[in-house]
Image (cartoon, rainbow, N blue to C red; front, side, top):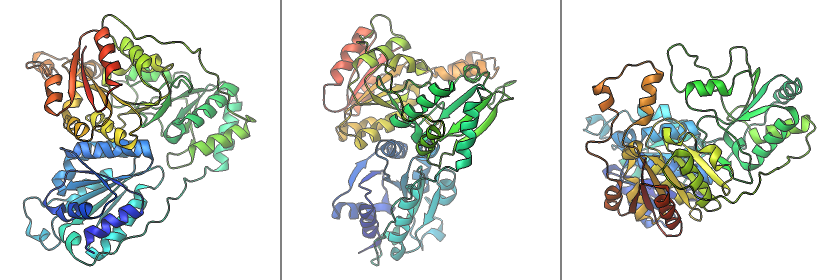
Length: 513
Protein backbone atom coordinates (compact mmCIF):
# COMPACT_ATOMS: atom_id res chain seq x y z
CA UNK A 1 0.00 0.00 0.00
CA UNK A 2 1.44 3.37 -0.97
CA UNK A 3 0.83 6.61 0.89
CA UNK A 4 -1.95 7.74 -1.47
CA UNK A 5 -3.83 4.48 -0.96
CA UNK A 6 -3.49 4.80 2.81
CA UNK A 7 -4.97 8.30 2.49
CA UNK A 8 -8.00 7.01 0.56
CA UNK A 9 -8.57 4.21 3.09
CA UNK A 10 -8.32 6.70 5.95
CA UNK A 11 -10.89 9.00 4.33
CA UNK A 12 -13.29 6.11 3.72
CA UNK A 13 -12.89 4.70 7.22
CA UNK A 14 -13.82 8.11 8.61
CA UNK A 15 -16.91 8.45 6.40
CA UNK A 16 -15.42 11.01 4.02
CA UNK A 17 -16.89 9.89 0.70
CA UNK A 18 -16.74 13.01 -1.52
CA UNK A 19 -13.72 14.75 -3.04
CA UNK A 20 -13.95 18.02 -4.96
CA UNK A 21 -10.85 18.13 -7.11
CA UNK A 22 -8.70 20.13 -9.49
CA UNK A 23 -5.55 17.97 -9.52
CA UNK A 24 -2.12 18.35 -11.09
CA UNK A 25 1.05 16.32 -11.59
CA UNK A 26 1.96 16.13 -7.90
CA UNK A 27 -1.40 14.53 -7.09
CA UNK A 28 -1.47 11.80 -9.78
CA UNK A 29 -0.87 8.96 -7.34
CA UNK A 30 -3.75 10.16 -5.19
CA UNK A 31 -5.92 10.37 -8.33
CA UNK A 32 -4.89 6.82 -9.28
CA UNK A 33 -5.66 5.56 -5.76
CA UNK A 34 -9.15 7.11 -5.95
CA UNK A 35 -9.65 5.11 -9.13
CA UNK A 36 -8.43 1.79 -7.68
CA UNK A 37 -10.28 2.02 -4.36
CA UNK A 38 -14.07 2.35 -4.75
CA UNK A 39 -16.31 4.35 -2.45
CA UNK A 40 -15.40 8.02 -2.96
CA UNK A 41 -17.33 10.28 -5.32
CA UNK A 42 -14.83 12.39 -7.24
CA UNK A 43 -16.19 15.72 -8.50
CA UNK A 44 -14.02 17.55 -11.02
CA UNK A 45 -14.15 21.37 -10.89
CA UNK A 46 -12.48 23.60 -13.45
CA UNK A 47 -11.23 26.15 -10.92
CA UNK A 48 -9.96 25.73 -7.40
CA UNK A 49 -12.31 28.38 -6.04
CA UNK A 50 -15.19 26.21 -7.25
CA UNK A 51 -13.59 23.26 -5.42
CA UNK A 52 -13.41 25.07 -2.09
CA UNK A 53 -16.81 26.80 -2.37
CA UNK A 54 -18.50 23.49 -3.16
CA UNK A 55 -16.84 21.81 -0.17
CA UNK A 56 -18.05 24.68 2.04
CA UNK A 57 -21.73 24.21 1.11
CA UNK A 58 -21.41 20.41 1.23
CA UNK A 59 -20.51 20.71 4.94
CA UNK A 60 -23.33 23.19 5.58
CA UNK A 61 -25.88 20.71 4.19
CA UNK A 62 -24.47 17.40 5.47
CA UNK A 63 -22.57 18.28 8.65
CA UNK A 64 -19.67 16.11 7.48
CA UNK A 65 -16.50 17.17 5.68
CA UNK A 66 -15.68 16.62 2.05
CA UNK A 67 -12.08 16.50 0.92
CA UNK A 68 -10.63 18.90 -1.60
CA UNK A 69 -7.71 18.21 -3.91
CA UNK A 70 -5.65 21.22 -4.94
CA UNK A 71 -2.40 21.44 -6.91
CA UNK A 72 0.56 22.92 -5.02
CA UNK A 73 0.73 26.44 -3.63
CA UNK A 74 -0.78 28.26 -6.62
CA UNK A 75 -3.73 25.85 -6.68
CA UNK A 76 -4.32 26.58 -3.01
CA UNK A 77 -4.02 30.30 -3.73
CA UNK A 78 -6.75 30.04 -6.37
CA UNK A 79 -9.07 28.50 -3.77
CA UNK A 80 -8.28 30.85 -0.88
CA UNK A 81 -11.27 33.19 -1.29
CA UNK A 82 -13.83 30.46 -0.69
CA UNK A 83 -11.67 28.89 2.01
CA UNK A 84 -11.92 32.29 3.68
CA UNK A 85 -15.72 32.11 3.38
CA UNK A 86 -15.68 28.56 4.74
CA UNK A 87 -13.60 29.68 7.71
CA UNK A 88 -16.02 32.53 8.45
CA UNK A 89 -18.92 30.11 8.14
CA UNK A 90 -17.11 27.56 10.34
CA UNK A 91 -17.32 24.77 7.78
CA UNK A 92 -15.33 21.57 8.14
CA UNK A 93 -13.16 20.75 5.11
CA UNK A 94 -10.30 18.27 4.70
CA UNK A 95 -8.22 20.48 2.42
CA UNK A 96 -5.61 18.30 0.67
CA UNK A 97 -2.89 20.19 -1.20
CA UNK A 98 -0.34 18.28 -3.27
CA UNK A 99 3.22 19.54 -3.36
CA UNK A 100 6.73 18.93 -4.66
CA UNK A 101 8.42 15.70 -3.56
CA UNK A 102 10.30 16.22 -0.31
CA UNK A 103 13.71 15.85 -2.01
CA UNK A 104 12.72 18.07 -4.95
CA UNK A 105 11.46 20.98 -2.88
CA UNK A 106 14.98 22.32 -2.06
CA UNK A 107 15.64 22.73 -5.80
CA UNK A 108 13.12 25.60 -5.90
CA UNK A 109 11.20 24.44 -8.98
CA UNK A 110 8.74 26.93 -10.54
CA UNK A 111 5.70 25.70 -8.55
CA UNK A 112 7.50 25.70 -5.20
CA UNK A 113 5.66 28.00 -2.78
CA UNK A 114 5.06 28.70 0.89
CA UNK A 115 2.03 26.43 1.09
CA UNK A 116 1.91 26.50 4.89
CA UNK A 117 2.08 30.31 4.89
CA UNK A 118 -0.83 30.61 2.50
CA UNK A 119 -2.88 27.95 4.29
CA UNK A 120 -2.58 29.15 7.90
CA UNK A 121 -4.89 32.21 7.75
CA UNK A 122 -7.80 30.06 6.51
CA UNK A 123 -7.03 26.84 8.39
CA UNK A 124 -7.50 25.72 11.97
CA UNK A 125 -5.04 22.87 11.30
CA UNK A 126 -2.04 22.70 8.94
CA UNK A 127 0.28 19.75 8.59
CA UNK A 128 2.80 18.59 5.98
CA UNK A 129 3.15 14.81 5.62
CA UNK A 130 6.82 13.91 6.14
CA UNK A 131 6.71 10.33 4.81
CA UNK A 132 4.34 7.77 3.29
CA UNK A 133 4.28 5.93 6.61
CA UNK A 134 2.82 9.06 8.25
CA UNK A 135 0.22 9.99 5.63
CA UNK A 136 -2.56 7.87 7.17
CA UNK A 137 -2.02 9.20 10.68
CA UNK A 138 -1.71 12.78 9.41
CA UNK A 139 -4.91 12.40 7.39
CA UNK A 140 -6.72 11.05 10.45
CA UNK A 141 -5.57 14.09 12.43
CA UNK A 142 -6.80 16.41 9.66
CA UNK A 143 -10.21 14.74 9.59
CA UNK A 144 -10.52 15.02 13.37
CA UNK A 145 -9.55 18.68 13.15
CA UNK A 146 -12.09 19.39 10.38
CA UNK A 147 -14.83 17.86 12.54
CA UNK A 148 -13.90 19.84 15.66
CA UNK A 149 -17.08 21.69 16.63
CA UNK A 150 -18.39 23.79 15.01
CA UNK A 151 -16.13 22.91 12.04
CA UNK A 152 -12.90 24.22 10.54
CA UNK A 153 -10.66 23.95 7.51
CA UNK A 154 -7.91 21.37 8.06
CA UNK A 155 -5.12 21.55 5.48
CA UNK A 156 -3.00 18.46 4.78
CA UNK A 157 -0.02 19.05 2.49
CA UNK A 158 0.88 15.90 0.55
CA UNK A 159 4.36 15.87 -1.07
CA UNK A 160 4.40 13.67 -4.17
CA UNK A 161 6.82 11.07 -2.80
CA UNK A 162 4.76 10.57 0.36
CA UNK A 163 1.93 9.54 -1.99
CA UNK A 164 3.91 7.12 -4.15
CA UNK A 165 6.20 5.44 -1.60
CA UNK A 166 5.06 1.93 -0.63
CA UNK A 167 4.93 2.08 3.15
CA UNK A 168 1.43 3.49 3.65
CA UNK A 169 -0.59 2.68 6.79
CA UNK A 170 -4.25 3.75 7.08
CA UNK A 171 -4.97 6.10 9.97
CA UNK A 172 -7.73 5.71 12.53
CA UNK A 173 -9.91 8.67 13.51
CA UNK A 174 -11.53 9.20 16.88
CA UNK A 175 -15.26 10.10 16.91
CA UNK A 176 -15.93 13.85 16.89
CA UNK A 177 -16.15 15.38 20.35
CA UNK A 178 -19.45 17.05 21.30
CA UNK A 179 -19.53 20.83 21.63
CA UNK A 180 -18.44 22.36 24.91
CA UNK A 181 -21.26 22.72 27.42
CA UNK A 182 -22.01 26.32 28.38
CA UNK A 183 -21.04 27.45 31.87
CA UNK A 184 -23.99 27.65 34.25
CA UNK A 185 -22.99 31.19 35.21
CA UNK A 186 -23.57 32.36 31.63
CA UNK A 187 -27.06 30.84 31.72
CA UNK A 188 -27.90 32.42 35.07
CA UNK A 189 -26.60 35.81 33.91
CA UNK A 190 -28.66 35.69 30.71
CA UNK A 191 -31.78 34.71 32.68
CA UNK A 192 -31.27 37.60 35.10
CA UNK A 193 -30.87 40.08 32.24
CA UNK A 194 -33.98 38.79 30.48
CA UNK A 195 -36.00 39.14 33.71
CA UNK A 196 -34.77 42.71 34.24
CA UNK A 197 -37.17 44.28 31.75
CA UNK A 198 -34.37 46.30 30.13
CA UNK A 199 -34.36 46.43 26.31
CA UNK A 200 -32.56 43.22 25.37
CA UNK A 201 -31.62 41.58 22.08
CA UNK A 202 -30.81 37.89 21.48
CA UNK A 203 -28.37 37.69 18.55
CA UNK A 204 -28.53 34.14 17.18
CA UNK A 205 -25.94 32.35 15.03
CA UNK A 206 -24.45 28.99 14.14
CA UNK A 207 -26.38 25.84 15.05
CA UNK A 208 -28.93 27.97 16.92
CA UNK A 209 -30.33 29.00 13.51
CA UNK A 210 -31.81 25.54 12.94
CA UNK A 211 -35.55 25.01 13.32
CA UNK A 212 -35.86 23.74 16.91
CA UNK A 213 -33.44 26.22 18.56
CA UNK A 214 -35.08 29.09 16.71
CA UNK A 215 -38.49 28.17 18.08
CA UNK A 216 -37.00 27.95 21.55
CA UNK A 217 -35.43 31.40 21.12
CA UNK A 218 -38.78 32.69 19.91
CA UNK A 219 -40.47 31.34 23.04
CA UNK A 220 -37.85 33.00 25.26
CA UNK A 221 -38.29 36.31 23.43
CA UNK A 222 -42.08 36.10 23.67
CA UNK A 223 -41.99 35.35 27.40
CA UNK A 224 -39.50 38.08 28.29
CA UNK A 225 -40.16 40.85 25.78
CA UNK A 226 -36.70 40.52 24.27
CA UNK A 227 -36.00 40.99 20.57
CA UNK A 228 -34.15 38.51 18.37
CA UNK A 229 -32.02 38.92 15.26
CA UNK A 230 -29.65 36.89 13.12
CA UNK A 231 -26.20 38.00 11.92
CA UNK A 232 -25.71 39.83 8.63
CA UNK A 233 -24.39 36.73 6.82
CA UNK A 234 -25.27 33.45 8.53
CA UNK A 235 -24.11 30.13 7.09
CA UNK A 236 -27.53 28.46 7.14
CA UNK A 237 -30.99 29.43 8.42
CA UNK A 238 -34.12 27.27 8.62
CA UNK A 239 -36.91 29.36 7.08
CA UNK A 240 -40.44 29.06 5.73
CA UNK A 241 -44.09 29.17 6.75
CA UNK A 242 -43.73 26.70 9.63
CA UNK A 243 -40.61 28.35 11.04
CA UNK A 244 -39.64 31.48 12.95
CA UNK A 245 -39.62 34.60 10.73
CA UNK A 246 -36.17 35.75 11.86
CA UNK A 247 -34.73 38.94 10.43
CA UNK A 248 -31.02 39.55 10.04
CA UNK A 249 -28.95 42.62 10.87
CA UNK A 250 -29.01 44.62 7.61
CA UNK A 251 -25.80 45.07 5.65
CA UNK A 252 -26.03 48.88 5.08
CA UNK A 253 -24.35 50.58 8.02
CA UNK A 254 -27.12 53.06 8.84
CA UNK A 255 -29.83 50.38 8.72
CA UNK A 256 -27.67 48.08 10.84
CA UNK A 257 -27.21 50.72 13.52
CA UNK A 258 -30.94 51.41 13.51
CA UNK A 259 -31.76 47.71 14.00
CA UNK A 260 -29.95 47.70 17.37
CA UNK A 261 -30.88 51.22 18.44
CA UNK A 262 -31.97 51.51 22.07
CA UNK A 263 -30.78 48.03 23.05
CA UNK A 264 -29.26 47.99 26.57
CA UNK A 265 -28.25 44.32 26.67
CA UNK A 266 -27.03 42.21 23.76
CA UNK A 267 -26.90 38.45 24.42
CA UNK A 268 -24.75 36.50 21.95
CA UNK A 269 -25.88 32.94 21.17
CA UNK A 270 -23.47 31.00 18.98
CA UNK A 271 -22.07 34.10 17.33
CA UNK A 272 -19.77 37.08 17.93
CA UNK A 273 -20.43 40.76 18.57
CA UNK A 274 -21.73 42.45 15.40
CA UNK A 275 -19.42 44.83 13.56
CA UNK A 276 -19.72 46.82 10.35
CA UNK A 277 -18.37 45.16 7.21
CA UNK A 278 -16.08 48.17 6.63
CA UNK A 279 -14.98 51.33 8.34
CA UNK A 280 -16.94 54.42 7.30
CA UNK A 281 -15.91 58.01 8.06
CA UNK A 282 -17.63 59.28 11.19
CA UNK A 283 -19.48 56.02 11.93
CA UNK A 284 -18.84 53.39 14.61
CA UNK A 285 -17.28 49.99 13.98
CA UNK A 286 -19.47 48.08 16.44
CA UNK A 287 -23.15 48.00 15.50
CA UNK A 288 -24.60 48.12 19.01
CA UNK A 289 -25.05 51.35 21.03
CA UNK A 290 -22.17 52.67 23.15
CA UNK A 291 -24.15 52.16 26.36
CA UNK A 292 -25.12 48.59 25.47
CA UNK A 293 -23.73 45.73 27.59
CA UNK A 294 -22.65 42.66 25.64
CA UNK A 295 -23.10 39.23 27.25
CA UNK A 296 -22.07 35.83 25.90
CA UNK A 297 -24.52 33.01 26.46
CA UNK A 298 -22.66 30.66 24.09
CA UNK A 299 -19.50 31.16 22.05
CA UNK A 300 -19.47 29.78 18.48
CA UNK A 301 -17.51 26.73 19.72
CA UNK A 302 -20.02 26.03 22.51
CA UNK A 303 -23.35 24.19 22.52
CA UNK A 304 -25.72 27.05 21.64
CA UNK A 305 -28.88 24.88 21.26
CA UNK A 306 -28.14 23.26 24.63
CA UNK A 307 -27.59 26.68 26.19
CA UNK A 308 -30.96 27.90 24.89
CA UNK A 309 -32.66 24.82 26.36
CA UNK A 310 -31.00 25.47 29.73
CA UNK A 311 -31.93 29.16 29.56
CA UNK A 312 -35.57 28.31 28.80
CA UNK A 313 -35.61 25.95 31.80
CA UNK A 314 -34.11 28.65 34.03
CA UNK A 315 -36.87 31.01 32.92
CA UNK A 316 -39.59 28.43 33.52
CA UNK A 317 -40.43 28.02 29.83
CA UNK A 318 -41.47 24.39 29.46
CA UNK A 319 -41.81 24.10 25.73
CA UNK A 320 -41.48 26.24 22.64
CA UNK A 321 -44.78 27.45 21.24
CA UNK A 322 -45.07 27.36 17.47
CA UNK A 323 -47.58 29.94 16.28
CA UNK A 324 -47.67 30.06 12.52
CA UNK A 325 -48.73 32.83 10.22
CA UNK A 326 -51.92 32.62 8.21
CA UNK A 327 -51.52 29.95 5.55
CA UNK A 328 -51.84 32.33 2.65
CA UNK A 329 -51.85 30.90 -0.85
CA UNK A 330 -49.04 32.80 -2.52
CA UNK A 331 -49.28 33.84 -6.15
CA UNK A 332 -46.34 34.69 -8.42
CA UNK A 333 -45.85 38.40 -9.04
CA UNK A 334 -46.46 40.02 -12.41
CA UNK A 335 -45.33 43.12 -14.26
CA UNK A 336 -42.03 44.94 -14.05
CA UNK A 337 -39.19 43.22 -12.23
CA UNK A 338 -38.39 44.40 -8.68
CA UNK A 339 -36.57 42.70 -5.77
CA UNK A 340 -39.86 42.40 -3.87
CA UNK A 341 -41.65 40.81 -6.82
CA UNK A 342 -38.78 38.38 -7.40
CA UNK A 343 -38.99 37.32 -3.75
CA UNK A 344 -42.78 36.92 -4.05
CA UNK A 345 -42.49 34.66 -7.10
CA UNK A 346 -39.71 32.69 -5.47
CA UNK A 347 -41.87 32.12 -2.38
CA UNK A 348 -44.85 31.11 -4.51
CA UNK A 349 -43.02 28.69 -6.81
CA UNK A 350 -40.20 27.12 -4.81
CA UNK A 351 -40.75 23.46 -3.88
CA UNK A 352 -41.00 22.32 -0.27
CA UNK A 353 -37.57 21.74 1.30
CA UNK A 354 -35.68 23.81 -1.27
CA UNK A 355 -32.17 25.10 -0.64
CA UNK A 356 -31.68 28.78 -1.44
CA UNK A 357 -28.15 30.01 -2.15
CA UNK A 358 -27.98 33.77 -1.74
CA UNK A 359 -25.25 35.74 -3.45
CA UNK A 360 -27.71 38.29 -4.75
CA UNK A 361 -25.59 41.03 -3.11
CA UNK A 362 -27.35 44.43 -3.16
CA UNK A 363 -30.40 43.31 -5.16
CA UNK A 364 -31.33 40.67 -2.61
CA UNK A 365 -31.42 42.78 0.54
CA UNK A 366 -35.21 42.97 0.55
CA UNK A 367 -35.87 39.28 -0.10
CA UNK A 368 -36.25 38.11 3.50
CA UNK A 369 -39.67 39.56 4.54
CA UNK A 370 -41.24 38.39 1.28
CA UNK A 371 -40.16 34.77 1.71
CA UNK A 372 -41.29 34.20 5.34
CA UNK A 373 -44.46 32.45 4.17
CA UNK A 374 -42.72 30.35 1.50
CA UNK A 375 -42.58 26.55 1.76
CA UNK A 376 -40.04 25.40 4.33
CA UNK A 377 -36.49 25.78 3.07
CA UNK A 378 -32.87 26.40 4.09
CA UNK A 379 -31.16 29.69 3.21
CA UNK A 380 -27.36 29.74 2.74
CA UNK A 381 -25.42 32.98 2.41
CA UNK A 382 -22.04 34.41 1.57
CA UNK A 383 -20.39 34.33 5.00
CA UNK A 384 -17.01 35.95 4.54
CA UNK A 385 -17.67 38.68 2.00
CA UNK A 386 -15.37 37.14 -0.66
CA UNK A 387 -17.62 37.16 -3.71
CA UNK A 388 -17.73 34.23 -6.11
CA UNK A 389 -19.23 31.75 -3.64
CA UNK A 390 -22.78 31.39 -4.97
CA UNK A 391 -22.42 29.08 -7.97
CA UNK A 392 -19.86 26.81 -6.23
CA UNK A 393 -22.06 26.65 -3.12
CA UNK A 394 -25.06 25.68 -5.24
CA UNK A 395 -22.93 22.89 -6.71
CA UNK A 396 -21.79 21.57 -3.32
CA UNK A 397 -25.25 21.85 -1.77
CA UNK A 398 -26.80 19.87 -4.64
CA UNK A 399 -24.23 17.10 -4.19
CA UNK A 400 -24.71 17.09 -0.42
CA UNK A 401 -28.53 17.02 -0.66
CA UNK A 402 -29.36 15.46 -4.05
CA UNK A 403 -33.04 14.91 -3.18
CA UNK A 404 -33.64 18.66 -2.75
CA UNK A 405 -33.95 21.43 -5.33
CA UNK A 406 -31.29 24.14 -5.16
CA UNK A 407 -32.09 27.69 -6.29
CA UNK A 408 -29.14 30.07 -6.58
CA UNK A 409 -29.84 33.82 -6.45
CA UNK A 410 -26.68 35.10 -8.06
CA UNK A 411 -25.44 38.58 -8.96
CA UNK A 412 -23.89 38.68 -12.41
CA UNK A 413 -20.61 40.33 -11.46
CA UNK A 414 -19.72 37.87 -8.72
CA UNK A 415 -20.92 34.96 -10.87
CA UNK A 416 -18.08 35.69 -13.30
CA UNK A 417 -15.55 34.85 -10.58
CA UNK A 418 -16.57 31.19 -10.61
CA UNK A 419 -18.62 30.68 -13.77
CA UNK A 420 -16.84 27.32 -14.20
CA UNK A 421 -19.17 25.87 -11.56
CA UNK A 422 -21.86 25.64 -14.26
CA UNK A 423 -19.76 23.05 -16.10
CA UNK A 424 -19.60 20.87 -12.99
CA UNK A 425 -23.36 21.23 -12.50
CA UNK A 426 -23.87 19.95 -16.06
CA UNK A 427 -21.30 17.15 -15.74
CA UNK A 428 -22.87 15.90 -12.49
CA UNK A 429 -26.47 16.54 -13.68
CA UNK A 430 -27.23 18.55 -10.55
CA UNK A 431 -30.74 19.86 -9.89
CA UNK A 432 -29.89 23.55 -9.64
CA UNK A 433 -31.82 26.57 -10.89
CA UNK A 434 -29.38 29.49 -11.22
CA UNK A 435 -31.08 32.90 -11.41
CA UNK A 436 -28.49 35.38 -12.66
CA UNK A 437 -29.46 38.90 -11.60
CA UNK A 438 -28.08 40.80 -14.55
CA UNK A 439 -27.84 44.50 -13.77
CA UNK A 440 -24.51 44.64 -15.63
CA UNK A 441 -22.76 46.60 -12.94
CA UNK A 442 -21.16 46.21 -9.52
CA UNK A 443 -24.20 47.80 -7.88
CA UNK A 444 -22.97 47.27 -4.33
CA UNK A 445 -19.87 49.33 -5.03
CA UNK A 446 -21.95 52.18 -6.37
CA UNK A 447 -23.63 52.30 -2.93
CA UNK A 448 -20.25 52.07 -1.21
CA UNK A 449 -18.94 55.10 -3.08
CA UNK A 450 -21.52 57.18 -1.23
CA UNK A 451 -21.03 55.38 2.08
CA UNK A 452 -17.31 56.15 2.24
CA UNK A 453 -17.76 59.73 1.02
CA UNK A 454 -15.97 59.27 -2.30
CA UNK A 455 -16.74 61.61 -5.20
CA UNK A 456 -16.76 59.46 -8.35
CA UNK A 457 -16.20 60.68 -11.88
CA UNK A 458 -16.40 58.92 -15.26
CA UNK A 459 -13.28 56.80 -14.70
CA UNK A 460 -14.46 55.50 -11.34
CA UNK A 461 -17.98 54.78 -12.58
CA UNK A 462 -16.64 52.97 -15.64
CA UNK A 463 -14.73 50.56 -13.39
CA UNK A 464 -18.03 49.54 -11.79
CA UNK A 465 -19.88 49.04 -15.09
CA UNK A 466 -20.13 45.54 -16.61
CA UNK A 467 -21.50 46.64 -19.98
CA UNK A 468 -19.50 47.40 -23.14
CA UNK A 469 -19.65 44.55 -23.90
CA UNK A 470 -22.70 43.12 -22.13
CA UNK A 471 -22.33 39.70 -20.56
CA UNK A 472 -24.53 37.14 -22.33
CA UNK A 473 -25.45 34.57 -19.69
CA UNK A 474 -27.50 32.41 -22.03
CA UNK A 475 -24.47 31.86 -24.25
CA UNK A 476 -22.12 31.51 -21.27
CA UNK A 477 -24.33 28.84 -19.73
CA UNK A 478 -24.86 26.97 -22.98
CA UNK A 479 -21.12 27.00 -23.53
CA UNK A 480 -20.79 25.14 -20.20
CA UNK A 481 -23.45 22.60 -21.19
CA UNK A 482 -26.29 24.16 -19.16
CA UNK A 483 -29.66 25.02 -20.75
CA UNK A 484 -30.54 28.68 -20.31
CA UNK A 485 -33.04 31.41 -21.21
CA UNK A 486 -33.48 35.13 -20.61
CA UNK A 487 -36.35 36.84 -18.78
CA UNK A 488 -37.26 40.52 -19.02
CA UNK A 489 -40.56 40.44 -17.12
CA UNK A 490 -42.00 38.69 -14.10
CA UNK A 491 -44.30 36.62 -16.34
CA UNK A 492 -41.29 35.25 -18.25
CA UNK A 493 -39.43 34.60 -15.01
CA UNK A 494 -42.39 32.73 -13.51
CA UNK A 495 -42.67 30.47 -16.56
CA UNK A 496 -38.95 29.72 -16.68
CA UNK A 497 -38.63 29.20 -12.93
CA UNK A 498 -41.62 26.85 -12.76
CA UNK A 499 -40.36 24.90 -15.74
CA UNK A 500 -36.82 24.58 -14.36
CA UNK A 501 -38.10 23.15 -11.08
CA UNK A 502 -39.69 20.23 -12.91
CA UNK A 503 -36.69 19.23 -14.98
CA UNK A 504 -33.62 17.17 -14.24
CA UNK A 505 -30.25 18.85 -14.24
CA UNK A 506 -29.21 22.50 -14.03
CA UNK A 507 -30.80 25.53 -15.65
CA UNK A 508 -29.81 29.20 -15.91
CA UNK A 509 -32.26 32.10 -15.99
CA UNK A 510 -30.69 35.42 -16.97
CA UNK A 511 -32.98 37.97 -15.32
CA UNK A 512 -32.44 41.45 -16.75
CA UNK A 513 -32.95 43.88 -13.87
